[in-house]
Length: 119
Image (cartoon, rainbow, N blue to C red; front, side, top):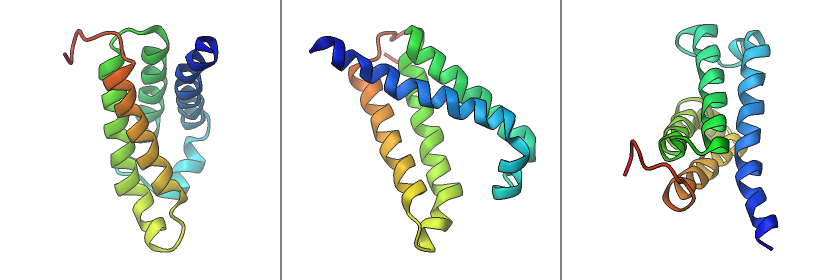
């Protein structure tokens, strides 16, 4: 049973890495959709941040900090990018980001091993 439960870390972290890669290879498409402040540079920065956060969670180095920063990123994304869609009737992106930010905070509170930065 523990082997199955241990899959949770990978099921949580790997999609962040994949989404970060999507940011890097599809920056033009994302920029056309949302026009973030900073343009494509911001999309590249968030892609790198998502990959770095996923790697941190997977290797267990500064994973508590990474999980908290992922939660902050997801909350910002929910309110700055997806809230307008939610107000127009499509709440899926907004709710997904809220849900994942809660999961990231639970990870930080209960699964993270490295308390070096955030005790």
